[in-house]
Length: 268
Length: 268
Image: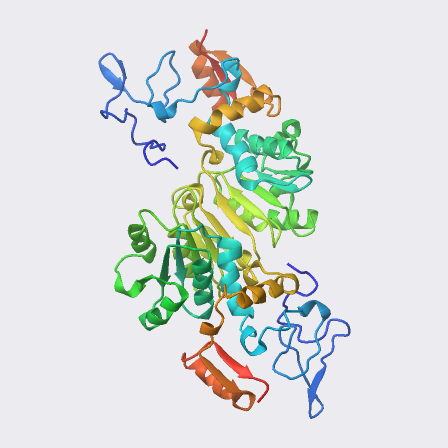
């Protein structure tokens, strides 16, 4: 974790002088997350810039941002499922699908998708999810459903919802002795993670991750190479593409749940 | 974790026929923890027996039992501190001292002992503990005290108390980004481990362990070898030695807090 550049949502300015580099009608426009990419040119701290393969199509690899890297990295860098193992993914939004893609690339045999919205199951198949659980369809905790499906629990679980209840279920659904649960979601500030400590005594591991444990500057070029080598399939993450002039349409698509993986084309 | 032989405190009998092999005055005496070692001869399931170096002095290596192996293994097998790193040990009873011994053997540079009883600090120095914190001496949470001592947190922590509050402190005192906390203590059945999930988001790891992740039959002979090679110093764990006829004196010493590492000499 970089003490100097770590995302600080309160900052909004350059580190050197505490000022913004953008303005409109004399009023400052603040930086967002240290990159401020919705502009043709931007000013970033050198630590926020990574040099990638110049042959990579920018209108595709721009998807390799916070959500996708976080989900994909949570599986490949943190959960590290073995070939042939079982993985439960909690939440099948963009982050969860990226986590599933990580399980698929890792060679997991069983990828169990858990979501309260069964409409998401069909598309999740493209990302390797091959079993589905909607907690609403069961009158017992989802961790018990998964334990029954898997003879005691999955080898790995990745939680991508931000719901503390899903975090608890994700931890409690891994197998005693070797199970690893990874928490990806950003919780509400008042949420408390509550579980009986005996769940730890049984040799389970609980890990958190930030940005999928990727170090952006040093690791992002390698993720782009995975795309160039056709290991990580980026295109299927893109559901819509709109020109910059229609950027608000992209936000509408996101807010209405029709898309959370829309490309904004700057070249328009 | 062995489904067949895992300690089941409800069992108390042999697996094959559900009966005891001991009796007194016609009444059965039940087995304890699958070994029932307070007798000159015993009947165990083959899976409960490990063959150790015949040159090992039994009156010393008998200390390499549940408590010592659990604490030592929690550090060397689960927390795995690197040479030169910092380790906090919560609880300086026999298990915590064994955890400290594991940190010493691993080459940790800073071994911070945390205990509510400062009388335990002097003896803990023998086990490599070189800094001490009594939470009663501070008017802020012990995890904050440790964070200040260590520029943000320790590399590893091992909790050996069974107090859920110590478990939470042990987790919250490890450093963001790489810290690993290991829970060893057996909690009360109604305890809930509560922490803000953001502590996980910051790339910390929480692990539990059972018997220090040792597999008794396959791993215990190697622990005995560590003693024979003078790596693991077993003798300093022994504070008293009493003959079998005075076994109740040993329990008195334990219950009064004067000894929790007393040898019962069967040969007497």
